[in-house]
Image (tube, rainbow, N blue to C red; front, side, top):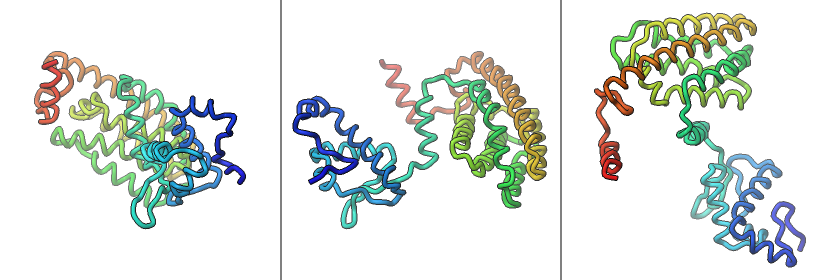
Length: 288
């Protein structure tokens, strides 16, 4: 019986080396399965070989194969189903899940507003320009609908925060249209950071007329340039928009930091109550 082209059995003369690699065998098998998926051009919903067949093809134990499949499932590349018709099936990683995982990587990296905007300034003009010729009337209506949320001065802190999120969602509409999946994903990730970083949330809770009005002015100009199919103007306006947003956000960041340093808050505003879960964790941390 000839070896499977993707899953070759170990040679007898390689037995000693194989034993030394036992701890890494699940990883090697998961990588081989990835290669198999790519070689066969399998798509989400396609079924992998059954577990018994994988064990036979790979010359591996049931536990090793299951560990490899579990690793792929954790990565979001496969989904397992039990019962009749069950097995391991190719799955796709949802974009939001990928964004969350990447966000976890940066959790302890102390990202700053400057870090994010330095990259937005470089990439967002190209991302938006890539949308030219790909937008229909419905897309422009979506952009204009987002802008209605921040057409007037906010009446409450909650409304100020909501307006800022809607302004960022304006850019998410363009991310969805961008034909370059890598460029779109990176831009989407940066917008997600701006929505969720603690310092940004604090900024959004402080009404800022200039930030709202300047952003809205650039977006109106951007819509006009997109409608005209003017790539040079689209890039220029987006670049200017990002530079202005960075300046205003960093200015507001300094104000917020001074405010919370004065009141002695570690992270949350003094008028924002701790959740019961955070109170419990804070108690544990204090005890130790």
